[in-house]
Image 1: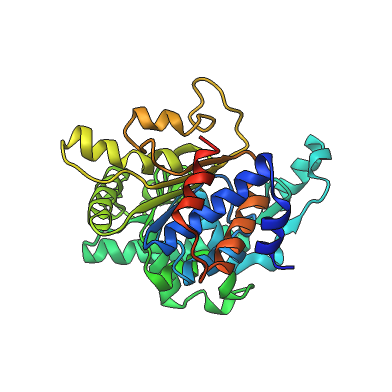
Image 2 (image 1 turned 90 degrees about the horizontal axis):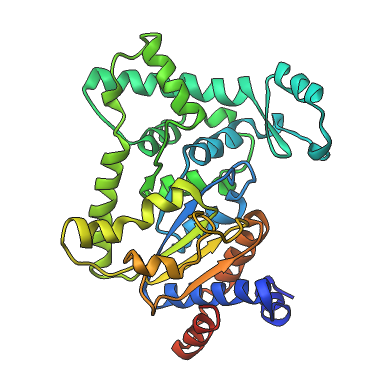
Length: 339
C-alpha cells in the first residue's frame, strides 16, 4: 500500500483527518496552477527533512522558502559532515555532566543529534569567509541564501559531501534558484561567525550582507509579481519568525502601502504549540483573517503534531498525487470541516 493509499484509508478522524485534508488541499492548490511557499522553523534540516523536501522542490511542489538561519546552514552542515554526526538515542536522560562531555568533544547537540564543530561549522566558515572577502573587494552585496548558493555552485565543498545531493533540500533549491528568506539570520551559527569576522577585522563592513528589511522588500516584490498570475499557498512548519515574517506581506501591501493583492489562498501549519492567548505560534488560523492575511474562503488547517513525522507524510502524499485532480467540491468540504 502506498503512503497516499494508507492515509486515504486510515486517516479518518482528529489530527489524522486534518493531515489527509491538508494534503488533499495542497494537491488541489498545485493542480489548480497555484504556487506554494514553505516556511521552516526549528531544526528541520538536522532532522534531515531534505530527504523528502528536496524532491518536492525538484518536482515544483514548493516554489519559495522562508526559514531560520539555522535551517539554511544546517542543511550544508549535514551535506559535508553527516558521517561524523553523533546520534544520542537516550537524549532525554543525559546529565549535565554528560552534556559537558559532548561539549568538550566539540559536539553541539540538537535534540538527539550532535553536530561536529570542526567538520561542520569550521569547514563551512572558511569557505564562506572567502566569499565575503570577495564580495567586499568587488563592492557587492548579497542575501544570506545567495552566499550559500555561491558556495554550492563553486564546488569547493564537493569532495567533502557525505550524503547524496538528492537528499539536500538546499542543493535542490539552488538548482531551481528558489528565493529563500532568512529573517533573523544573525540568530544562527554562521550569523554569529559573520559578526566575529567583523570584530577580528577579517572583513571590514556589514554592508556586504543584505539586511532583514531588504529581505522584506524583496518579499513584497516577489509576492506582487507572483500573485498577479498565481494563487499563492502558505505551508508552515513550526512557528516563530520564519512564519511570522512571511505571512505579514499581505497586510504590508494592503494596509501600509495602500496597494492591493490577493490574500494567501491556502494555509497549513504543523505545530505542537498549544493554542493559547498571546502565542502567535499557537494561534488559530481564523485570527489571521482580522489581519488581512487570509480570507474566510482560504482553505486552512492546523495539524497539532510533530513536523518531523507529519511533513514527510504530506510531502509523499503530494508527490504521489501529481496527476490526481481533486474536485473543488472535495476541497471545499475538507476545508469547511476544519474551520
